Image (cartoon, rainbow, N blue to C red; front, side, top):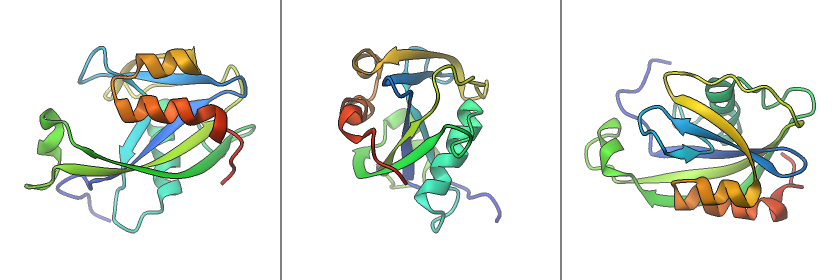
Length: 155
């Protein structure tokens, strides 16, 4: 597949967490102070959501979503939100909204994180409530607040 000229307005949000519900947040390289969970767009229209989620987790954190002790869960929830104006140039002209599919990824405590320096500059593990408060995105914060109810789902 050749790369798309624009990002598809279909993305994933993956809340990475431990069994104790500590959540991994990563700081955006292009927006210092913006802390978030793993996010990323589909590479092509027919790409399965779970494939996008696993790929983005690996690219952004170095974590293998299907590695030992890891469980990727499709939360079967979607957010539709307006794309921030500073990032609209990445999408085709006229695209203003994105559909975001939510996943949880449980990993063992102490899982190493290897950031993609092009995308993120720092990471931190926080208890779920503190992580929700730290997120810049309201939909990301809301997803983290769902974690205690959704953390037992399996893909």
